[in-house]
Image (cartoon, rainbow, N blue to C red; front, side, top):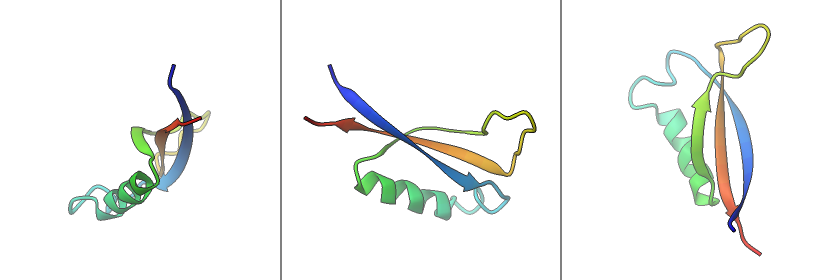
Length: 65
């Protein structure tokens, strides 16, 4: 059975993030991909007082024995 490890990166969500092809987001995804991390999901964190200014970017990578 395959095993995975996960990590979450908090990223500021602002108007610039998703405009113009999202270069800041793409740069971060490519940097993580070079280290073997694969994007799983991007979502707003669940919190009692929801802060829409933050995005959680969730990555996984396979563990090798």
